[in-house]
Image: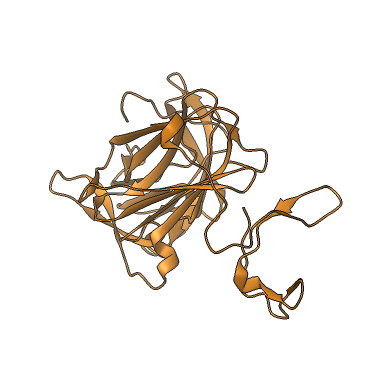
Length: 268
C-alpha cells in the first residue's frame, strides 16, 4: 500500500471459514522480515475443506460478512492497526487483498493537540459489508444496508492526552471504496474545541489499496467551541476533567441543571 509493507506480529489473529465451520488462528512463526507468517488454530477446531475464506482481523467476521468499526485507533507510528484484509483460497497458502483505501489527513498548528477526528459522508463507513469481487478480480466491500445514520460516520480516536500537531502530523483513516458525494471532517482538540471542514469538490474517490492525502495547517485550522453547546467548559470531577454540554442536556431556571433523562450526551 503506497510502498508500505504489511508487518505481522504474534498477537495477530485471522478467522478461517469453509462456509459451515469457522476457527480463529493466531500467528506463530514469522519470517521474511515480518511480512510472512504461519498461523495455528487457537480457538475452535481446524477448518477442513477445499475452499477457505480468510478474514483479518478475526474480530471483523460477521456471519459471512465483514464488520467495519465506528471507531478506529490512532497509531503513533503512522501505520494502520487491523487494516481490513480478505483472502479466498483452495489451499493452506494464501495472499490477502486489502479491502479499503486510506484517507490521510496531515495537520499542523502550534499549541494544539488532537483528541479525535470524525468523518461524516453520504455512504456507510462502518457496520456490515459484503465482500465482492471487482472488475480486476480483487476483493472489495459493499454495504449490506444502512440501518442507522451513525453508519455514515467514522471516528479516529487519538486518546485522552491527544496528539500534538506542532509539526505536520499524519492521521490515517481507512474507508470503503467509492465516490463520496459529501465529506465533512470534524477535528476535536483536547480542550474540546472543534474545527469543521467540508470538502468543496463534487466527489472524493477512495480506491482500494490507495491513499488520498489532504493537508491543512496554520490559518486553515480555526478551532472554536462546538455549535449548539453551552458556552464554556464544565469541570465534572476532582481530577479537573472538563467537558462541553449540549443544550439538550440542560435546563435553565436561573442556573443550568441536568435534565432528568440524559439520552443525548456529548464530550469534547
